Image (cartoon, rainbow over all chains, first blue to last red; front, side, top):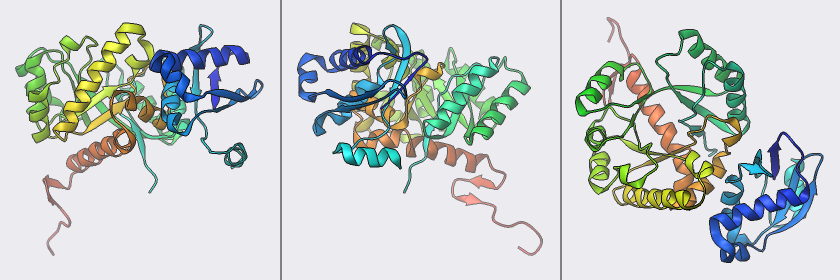
Length: 95
Length: 244
């Protein structure tokens, strides 16, 4: 996913925003079903790769779309690609 | 076949050229091919031309739209008579039940928008859906309140949207999901809009259609009607001249 911000959020700030959005929309039980985990975060390019269950991909997409701020500053998170494996994801991104 | 994504409710301030251009460029970058912005009666003709130029440069198809906010039924009918042939999209902001009912049964109305956030002031019920299903009116749902509201207000709003979506589905009424945003940072990709629409019961293909086929279908139908060759539904001029 690509972060659309005018500042560079730290890894913790980014994940806090993601968890906040997921728990706000689906609650703690719903968030537990996502098995959400950060795989990679490129601060310079503002790119992040997260892992989630196949069944909760759409839920996570909605939660990410609902993010309007990170650490109180305006931000948006856009999903660039979704894939089953990181290898395939990298291929998709290169394309 | 690749979908053509549309956002029929992009609220830009035409006086602020920089933000308007940025918003339009962002919409194009996010994957939209067609956008509509409500016409401001106070806007100068050159501001509207600038808007159209910005869309052209960004590779977007610009659709003219007007939002009517009548106080009663007579005012709505008078505005429809004046404006129907001047705009490609006519949206009625239903703030009273009387206006909502008239707008739902009038075939000149394209979109029904309920701008009030309080569910008691949103008049989209079964009677409204039944009237709208026999005319051409489509229910327009804006995503913006979902992004900016928080806590109980968002819960109540979501619950209202869920109810309205279910009613529209029951009466086979089509739904258009628009952004309704004025800030470019609040713009979302079409698939993200569809994902947000799943929060109120529009899932999978239906959600994607609400940001692609449904809005583009309205524009296509109205452009055909506004063209000089249109005579009546199903009848159009194919050839003119003495040899016909």
